[in-house]
Image 1 (cartoon, rainbow, N blue to C red):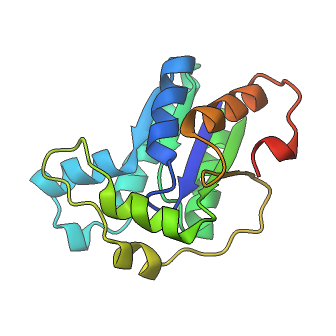
Image 2: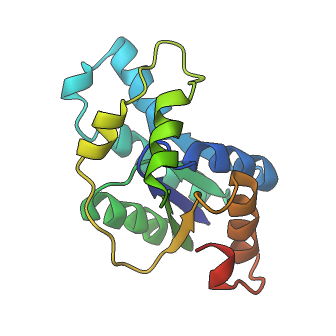
Length: 175
């Protein structure tokens, strides 16, 4: 199964993705890591465009064909990227789960963005201004929505795992 974790920076995607990757022993594809590696050696940051996503799509498809769970950690801001992830799963003949992370408490979201640390040496995290000015197309598609203003990363991971394992899931668990 392909599990796509999308949402603006600072909403808890990476923390939750790491918990899920350990629990499922999944392949973990983080767009920030891929783009940082490419920018560090090969591509100027402003010329990156969709290179990180294209690499991640190829790696995801290859690992899905090998029978692995794959977790994609990305902003996934455009309908085009959302459709591309779904096409990866379809080509590999596997299911996918699309999860959008939000933080409905604006003050809390801003605090997280302004006070987080990064485990990628040399990677510059986006500022609050970068986050709020980022192009992010509104979502109305069928997806799980996890609001990390009201739940921890562990609670979000547990919710997603119950869904992956086909256990009963109630909307109230992940508002």
